Image 1 (cartoon, rainbow, N blue to C red):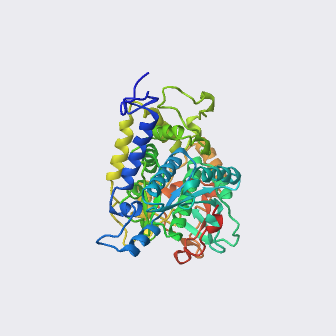
Image 2: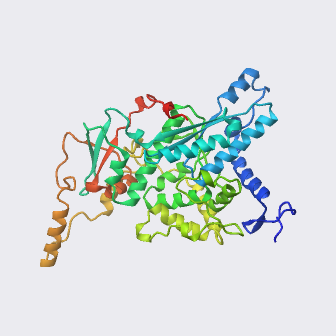
Image 3: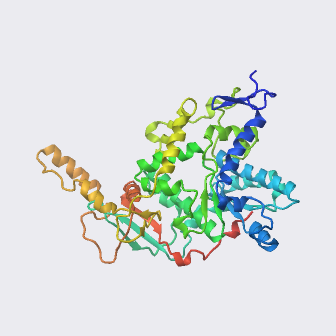
Length: 455
């Protein structure tokens, strides 16, 4: 047996970054990395530290500071979000013991799921509540049906992409019964389906944070997850979003600069998160995820539980994740290099006369995607010269006769939309290049707070 390099007393059970760890030392190692991020600047220190009267504030101001330090944890019930929640729970427990039952912050956890997933998700969260019962006065759990994204009573539109000139138009919809399932059904392209789900989930989480007046959203993304998102965003044509995606030091510009986003697991590999969850017995709470045994000397995951997918059936995110999973052991420095490089990126230069946002994903548009695409695309076909070419053209034309009128002039009743390049790419993967979507109305943003989903 190998001795733990940290304590030099207990036997090591795993090896991480070429260093042997016992269970206690490894849990402390991961916990300290998250807590370091939680104290990364004065803004987060004001949230997570216990405030007492000092030269800046009196007792009343200190108590108010503690009571208003609310954070939101998006709880996907994967290993990363569970690890973040567990470390925050330990922090609350330590503060209670140190400060006579008082804490410097409160947290709420939000899980977005489908109706089909709701029974099992509710069961997992009820079990989590029992595990963290000591801090039940400081932790609140919520479940939101993802169809709440389409809950606006009369605010729907049909978005259509004209592949002839890349213009995107919309017309109001009178049928307001659109569901996420219907949208996904019309997205035969798996990458487009995943892209739309990510937009919907992120919007619901941030909308909840805005409505609940939270100071920070604590995302559970590991270093591995951040790295595969950087690569995926680049491949999807959403590279301009990377700087905002990794920004932990600025207020969220997409949601009125009311809160910050924090990634406390940005220095921890997914394999390390999985090891933490196994040691802390959090695996039982995972949903749609199997904790891996990559770092352990004694393996416990059956090979039969690993679902092997063919490359052609994988999404962009899954391909990037598979690549990083394969190199985590011997070339983990590649993952940290990707994240560090992504963190150094800044927002692109604004090339438009005024600030606009994408109608679908709400990100800031820095460059006119339509003009750029028109400049790099050959829009006129070559002259048909052979019978085979004529036959192929006739077959193509018959297949695309209903592709949202690509040769029709713009209808005066249709609005031309501002769409980013990434969403134009997503629309190309939709059936008939159409998408039923919500019209964003900033004035109605705070109309319905989702407290009815509190558990």
